[in-house]
Length: 114
Length: 112
Image (cartoon, rainbow over all chains, first blue to last red; front, side, top):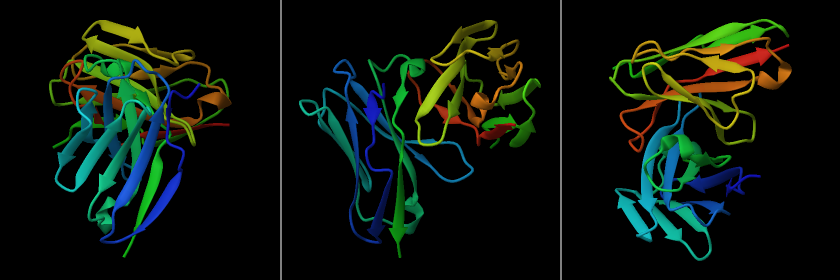
């Protein structure tokens, strides 16, 4: 029972264009969401988060959008750079007071084409 | 900047063997975690610890044991290895329950 789903295993985007990574969730109790980035042979690193009281959060080139009614979030990267090539995981939890409660998606491999 | 350090990076085990994955962090974090990632799957929590002497089960604890005798170290023990334990294992830590998690580089384990 995968409560957090990333239906696109891979995505290729031209350098300089926008990358959009999608994540869907089924548990309506989830109210805190995070994106992690993972390079090969490294551990995931935190990228950006959003709580359900917001529908958008920006950090430089990275913006996360949350659509609670659709149970959908997306990560936008603008403009995409070669260093953005990595696997991106979304994660969700009920509240932000228990990392042990995080549920991770299966990941999307983003490739930026120079 | 060591952060979270895991050893070994790669290991091949035979069915029925035991081994310990070592994990240490130098950030004085209270919380430590062990995750596994199977191909095409998200990270699954095996065990976690909220401080020295305290551990608790995660989503997939069967076949594993942990201990937390110090703040820095959180070893994961595999007893009687099985092919289903072939996976990539990540140790992680955070200062408190809701703070950013910092991951180690991962340990690739194959059980044959």
